[in-house]
Length: 54
Image (cartoon, rainbow, N blue to C red; front, side, top):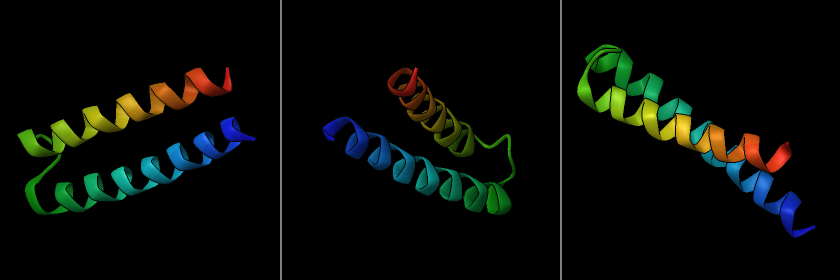
């Protein structure tokens, strides 16, 4: 049960981070350093999620 809650929490974080990234990319462009940084954070969250479900 705890693992399922952790997975759901990660999915929520992933959704929020993805929205943040697109919002900032719309303002600053996809190659802006802040957008790239958010993208890297999103990648880290996605990797964590993939490890949990594998």
